[in-house]
Image 1 (cartoon, helix red, strand yellow):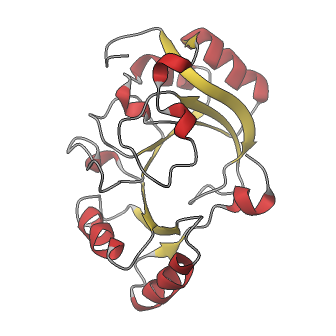
Image 2: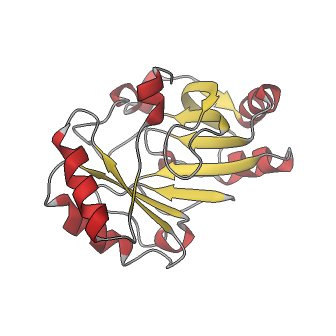
Length: 203
């Protein structure tokens, strides 16, 4: 789907859980996982979301109604790469119903939408679009090897000074945990972020 004004979106899944990562970890959240991604991270744990054509279209009203029915503290739009789509209609519908709306994105496409919180998780495979950086509330960089810290610092230099800076171990690379632990001790502007939902065994 091209980035145009649309009233439907390809949806992989919608579910009510708790936010497992970052600043809002532990918060009741309704997740809307949009389909479509062209970033191609080898460690992606939702590769089934990459091909948007394999997933059904849902109207803005259907998505908003499902979110309201769950009565979450926040609504989280994730993917795939959600910025492949114009998020204006969807985020406006969610916020008009009183929901706080958050975005989880690699930033690989131009920014869109009306958001209360933006989590940028940039990937070196496809760098963020310049329009994304100024909206970032939380920078979350996945670390697999020591060389990734240079990428993290490069990205940190482009987000607002107020943005939280988080380093997250890649789940299938245990050695990344020690790398991050040691780095944060020497660079206190960064924090450690863990995927707590995986430890809990929930989505």
